[in-house]
Length: 429
Image (cartoon, rainbow, N blue to C red; front, top):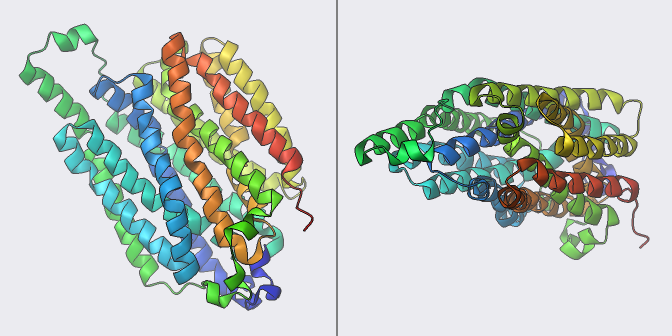
């Protein structure tokens, strides 16, 4: 990537010698696991809180909205802080917000107010915005420029590991397996109903409390670790960085668009996985959560497989193949029945696996001193995860069939295919 070249005013040895960048690379890669872990608890929270608060599909999709709207709100402040004070400062702020938001799940559960859960998730997501704005470009400049995309895919693979562990092992701790009908809840006395709701809400407290404490401990480790960093004053020409200059890049403009639709597709597929599995295949909630774990495992394996394949296939061409396959799989998800639908969703996870890091690295390629601005803009586009799931929820509520909602991810993969064909181009300035 451009930031690792001497032409940008940096000492190339800081980022290219393994003794300087390997340990920070490992430490930053751990962040991909942690934010993947909390993101992949959201598909567990959605059916759990839908049941606890008697929510519609549209209302439960606000869990995704509260998370991903934070990316839109906080991406530019995060980018500014990192341009001014460096990547490490951004990571520290992100970890602190992440930890505090997780711990706030305890008072949210005690209050029995849905809005408080949304608020805690928003604070967590503000922290994740800082982490993702920092970690994604930081990984691309930690090490040789020619392996930046493969390195980012490798780091993102641990996001996939978390996608397996969170639903498979934490999901059963949160989901009680009790599914009362409206008639059953109406027949309860106020005291019985309050006790039931309190018990349902309380199951999230311990997992999020432990997560919050771990994240704050990781923040302490980062604080005492010496990490190579880049601030604007360290980069030649950084004073000329601007949004206009960054947006002159056709790659970045396409990258913003593609990432908006990719994150929307990923959140739609993951967040409604349990609903699809229980309604189309008749699975119990707990069994569906285990299949969601396999969904995450497949996502992780896809990341490692994609990193391997990129040694032989150009990332852009691999993206074309994967996007095409996912368009076909989305059609199968709409038209299929029974367990075929569940296996189709798991297959979609495999072919989604390389999309985020590949779109990200392609989007910021060649930006030079505008890299941090470009990174912020692509992170802002993650707001697609806030806006598109409610659309899917509305289609599901209106048609009384969640499968019809898969027209949304199908359309998203079509946009990603267009990006793969056209997004590699650069402007002739």
